[in-house]
Image 1 (tube, rainbow, N blue to C red):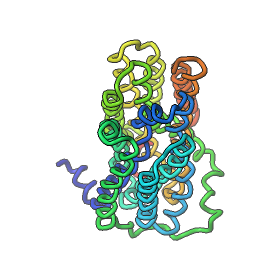
Image 2: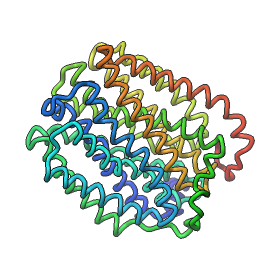
Image 3: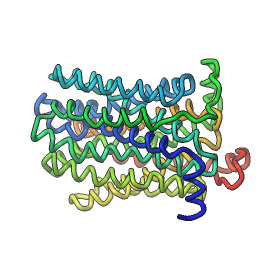
Length: 403
């Protein structure tokens, strides 16, 4: 172990870091679970392409909205208790859906709102881990906790197969088993950091929105995380519709793509610590734009898979890079800023997932959805080039920290 690695592990509270990762991982698993189940649900309920797109996008939008309230809750009652409450809501909602059954499109949307509480875990798990670590290790700490987005891999790997064996509605009940196990582990492992900021007046939590930097960071994350979670929720549908794969094989393909994006998130944070978050993001946007614009040209499954993996690698790296920057600028408001930035990411994911469904229904092709999102990545690159000089001259980063 290097001196830097030893310093990282000794500078924080690793049981809390593990708890944050496990909570985030299983929450993300169920947050996107409607995506891998979408082919079975669509066949059972007779959904149109647009309805399928909305079904998988609603949890993303609900999670985006709830991230703001969770960010506020974290700063009021602490991340550990906030996480416990959120986990209980998700478990109870899935159990109720399993027991009563989901038999309509409206029912899937209602379930999607409940699953939004799982997506909102982002605004809890990251501050839970972040507050234990000093500025020079924020990229690594946030990256490791944020690697919990690998839970989307679990959903893609196991949900289609379990749906084939037991029916898609039963998968909702089965998901409660690992969620309950992690909830118990979370109660024992997680601990609030001693340097938790004192509660503020409610209006004070929205103070960051008066600064342009908050809006820039929200916009940048809406592209990186929005692209990641939007693809994670939609790829099973894309592979089954475009290449006529079975839901199980489509799930495996999706898992491979999502795993790539999840794996590199901590590497993205570490890269940003080393070369600066701005420089890392500039590389990310170029690669993601080229890969997403190339997807419609990839007429074979191997070509499409390769391009999706490249896009997910870039977007996952970008997720870690953005959250190397957030604590440098808003260390005192990390809870609410995590919620606000996370909300923007969820909005981006809602747009991508829903736009792919509408593009397919209106034009007969997914291509317009990919082209527009690639354009958004290039727009984010242009914006980043516009603000980078100001950030580097006005932000007071800690010694040894690169912006």
